[in-house]
Length: 228
Image (cartoon, rainbow, N blue to C red):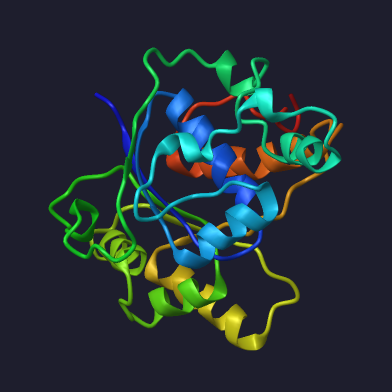
């Protein structure tokens, strides 16, 4: 049976984590219900030069076309940060059969399936998770579909992984992380380790994505584990 996860992209720095996570989950045969906030769209464009139309979304908007990369140094740096087309991607070492599909839901569509607890999923990831999104979740404020879907996963006791990327952290932000953990969420900050044979930025991105996949129970070969 195909596993299904909700992935939300919000307006914190670290859009490359989101793009890589989508690549890994679909390559592992998982279906993804995706929602992107307006601020998340802005970060995707600013950090990865990906122009995403939230009104007429197509998954191809998030896939970096390798033919685009020539001598332009900016595009070379984008490829290094989020080369989702790489033929030697570590995730491809995990047999998965058919790739999963991405189904998009507009952030303002509170009638979307993922807004209901009766719509079954195997978990949700907010990656990256802005401090504003985290605050809305822990205080039960539903201003968009992402907040509502997170609330659904908490009330249904399903896995919710939030991936904040902020530094330094205020007392308010730390308190919100504590509240999220007490409510049942997994707080997984984008804090890559360096013990797994890092040779480039891609290895650091894969470390964080690997830890997310561990929490979701998705098999991968993204990093060398401690002691292996």
